[in-house]
Length: 120
Image 1 (spheres, one colour):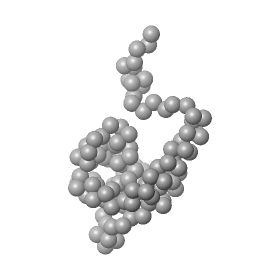
Image 2 (cartoon, rainbow, N blue to C red):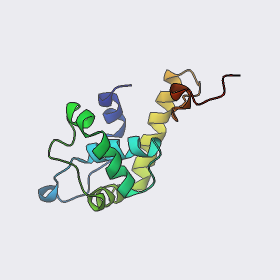
Image 3 (tube, rainbow, N blue to C red):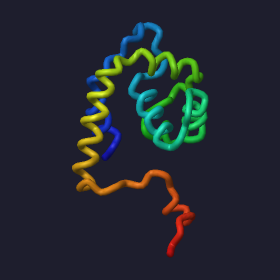
């Protein structure tokens, strides 16, 4: 699933921030936050650190061109999202992932890739 498809699933989430004060698009913050949380980030500071550590990748994909937001900025933007709208989008996205993988479990913790699992 590519970024544009992901964007389609979350396009129903409204950005309730004042348009004159927006530096970072809501999609950038939402996508990066989800990636960070899936990768184990716990809190706004760790989400910011995740974005910082992957900034070049995000820039190559058209995000965070103006730099990386402060953790307070991420928190305010994400906190402004209507929870029920986000929940509906997230459920639809997860259903699509479930269909794409034919219901198979997708390991996201990296143990298999790092070879730290028990081969026996």
